[in-house]
Length: 566
Ligand code: TEU
Ligand code: CA
Image (cartoon, rainbow, N blue to C red; front, top):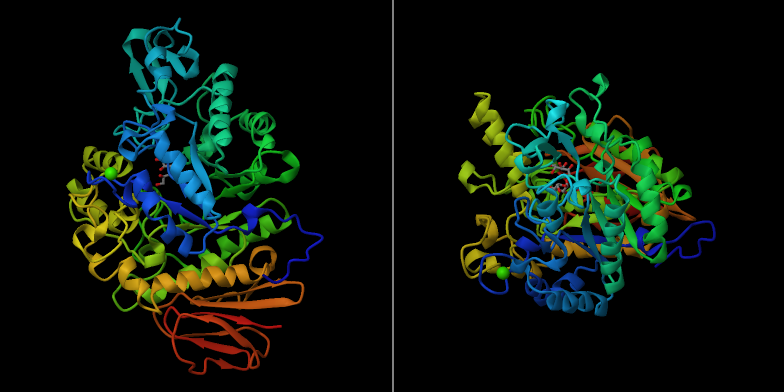
């Protein structure tokens, strides 16, 4: 590792780490029920180690009726039966730590499951001690003020409960009642639960929907300026940062752990979570990048033109600049809420799937902010593109389908759009080898396996020096070879080029030039200085055809290169 003498920089393990996200339901099934599990992960620890990653983020593995695949938690201190036992968890955690890999867990505390004992109690009577663990609108006050829900067929975030003659609030599905953070007892219960996991030795939390936890208990009418943008209203609760500061004081500050907020919002609002002077969280991820290219007023529909690279560059540059001043960001293109990155941001045609996967990997691992790399992207896995609604599992997709149907909307158009954007595209089983079900399971998997597993899989890619998998490993090594890729200054080059994204990362005397062709045709960029004499660090095309002519660089379709300048 170069550039380690950095007196002015606040070095932290979580800034220098490459995170690898695992969706446990789809990683590896160990007991033949078609569902990935903890023993499955344990059996693949050496594979994870071989990637060179430093930390793993696991999606929720707590007890859950799985209306939203683990994001509806019925017991925060137990492991989901389908995934295994607490003993399996302890073995897995030790297995990661023995290999020098840290583990962060999902913290889902905006809501719990309607089957959680708190809610089961709360719904029995207004006098129950858990009633105020949730948000209620008493029926005698009339119809509750409009609140939208993401996962509700009627998009209504209130649901009537007969025993209490009141409506409870659920920003997500009706099976996911929102927790009432106004109640100090609830907050203390959450903090205890966090200590339970931290005392087991986990290395931090990814905080689900954390921006939504504070609500005005009066439930005033939503201000008109948020019309159509209610998510932004939800992310601006009056006591949000008071709660996060308290959580930091009472729990997080006592441990050397990493925290990352799922924080929708503007630069200014997201910065509040991670400005070190405020004592809240470490990292945040924004949604502006992953939401690019969607048509307005429609659910996740990419327009015929796709997305604009110029907008993409503008958004990622803006966030990089903000975090260069203070705080710390993240960089990602895929996760369990997103389609496969190569389909959405690259090109998954047979000709370009591998090249554009490698190009996007070069982007993620050379940018500022901590990379969160989604499992399967290292193989170049792409969207499965289901034709039929019956193939889907995801509650978000199914409820949106119901909404379109109820409005008499165009269901074919909806299903076509979902081939690009639906979350299930990113949740299909991991592809280990070319045997039945990609070696993920011996029985019918919970979600269909992408038929391209016969040639997109770990086993085949291990044996190919130039595979997407081995390129990922090489690129992880590049990131770790010089702290310039972590702490280095980012400067955009050739602004206005609609095909090529070019920038430098620079620290002390080391300067790297990253040039990425996002286009399916040859394209040229002018980087402004003569670079004839410089050294190649990585290139996703083989061979050494001349691509540099003084300051002009000509790249083949989806070509990615990193060059070292000084
Ligand atoms: O997502 C929070 C969230 O705001 C989602 O609506 C997200 O924007 C959407 O899924 C994008 O398609 C988190 C989790 O990441 C998600 O998997 C859960 O379903 C959701 O919270 C509820 O817990
Ligand atoms: Ca299983």
